[in-house]
Image (cartoon, rainbow, N blue to C red; front, side, top):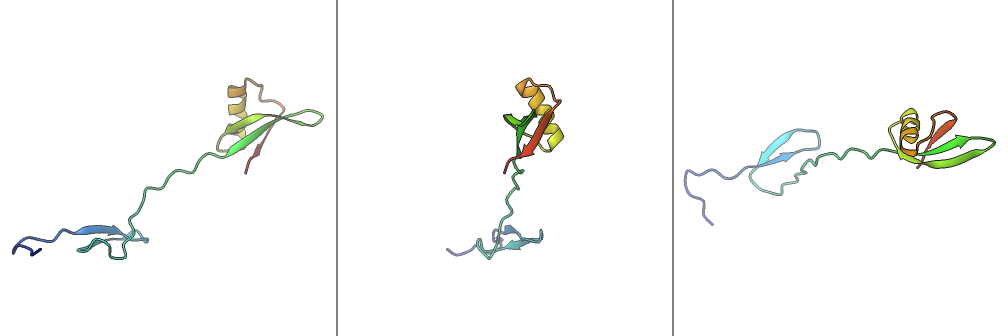
Length: 89
């Protein structure tokens, strides 16, 4: 298809790995589009009660150990004393 005189070609914008933006007249010119980064899921924590041995109580998702113990106290209806949180892999 012939291009009309005086009309500009459509420019495609590419975002390079370094964050630079470049314009290209062709659509697929070694161009990687930047995808929105998905937030990492919250790590899972196993909550245990300290007794003569550790007794598994449940699991919660939280950012750190103290937040995991606080969430477990709220969600599972437990007192936060004598609770141990270990990160699940």
